[in-house]
Length: 71
Image 1 (cartoon, rainbow, N blue to C red):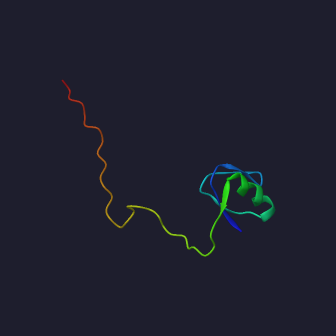
Image 2 (cartoon, rainbow, N blue to C red):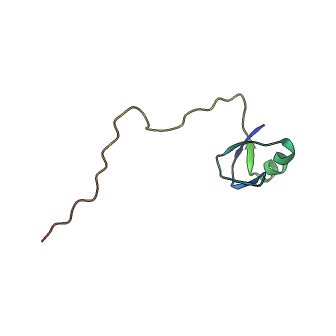
Image 3 (cartoon, one colour):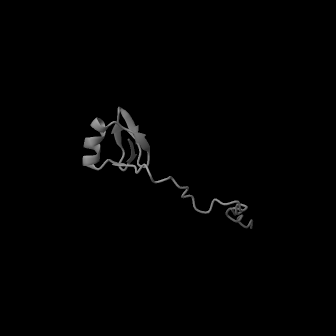
C-alpha cells in the first residue's frame, strides 16, 4: 500500500522527507502510522497538479537592484 510521509523519518534504512510517497508493507507501516510519521494514501483519489501560476504565460522579467550613482 502507498503511504505519504508526514514527518521526516527513516524507513527501510533510507531517510525520507515530508511529502514523499512510498510503498511500505503493513508490518513496517503499522508503527509508523501509530507514531504519526506516515499516513495512508487514498487509492481511489487521483493525483492532481497543484502548481499555481505555471501556465503558458510569458514569465515576468526580474529587475535587479538599480545601479548606484557615481558621484
